[in-house]
Length: 228
Image 1 (cartoon, one colour):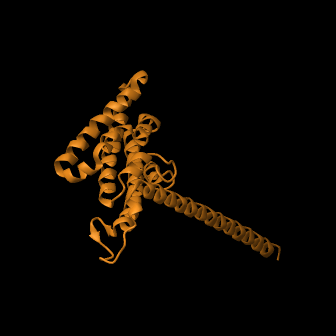
Image 2 (image 1 turned 60 degrees about the vertical axis):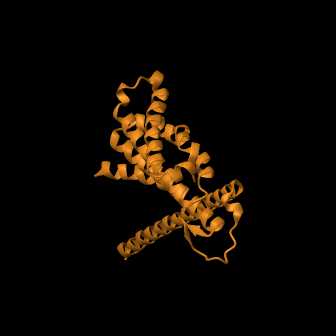
Image 3 (image 1 turned 120 degrees about the vertical axis):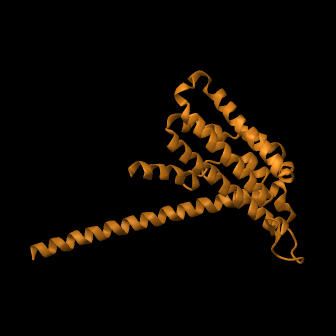
């Protein structure tokens, strides 16, 4: 049971506590470049999810046979193999989106989040933990991509996943689908994430203090009763 809980925690940490974008600020290149629409963000997120999970599975499975002297090169080869699979799969199934994403699909190879998880985690833990960590980190990355892409598409186009939301009278904020809009939206999301995290931390501190006070009062009351 303890092992299952720990594996679950490894997955959850990537979604929030150690989110690769909002906390570690990794993967900024695709984060800013391809999130001018929600569908682009989803496809890039799914591609990253597949590459990170499969490469973590392979690295963790063969970590005992990977020489330390060439481990980084082997990690890059493994990642590049799965990126190639993803690249051709998207080209075959979603050619229009593949054209929009362009070179940023092959550039998944250079995503520091993916290579970093192989070196920092997958190569040091068993397959179960490595896969759960990869699911959490890639899931957190996808959530960040979708959040940024949705906000930019809604404000910049007036639609979400290509579905019109506001009608013909809406005046799109064109800047939101341009690079400055990406930086602005990312900054606001980082601000909100940090604000929410701090408020949550303060709330937990207050709850802990209240619990301590209740415990002290309970002990004092029991002591008075015993003396009486």
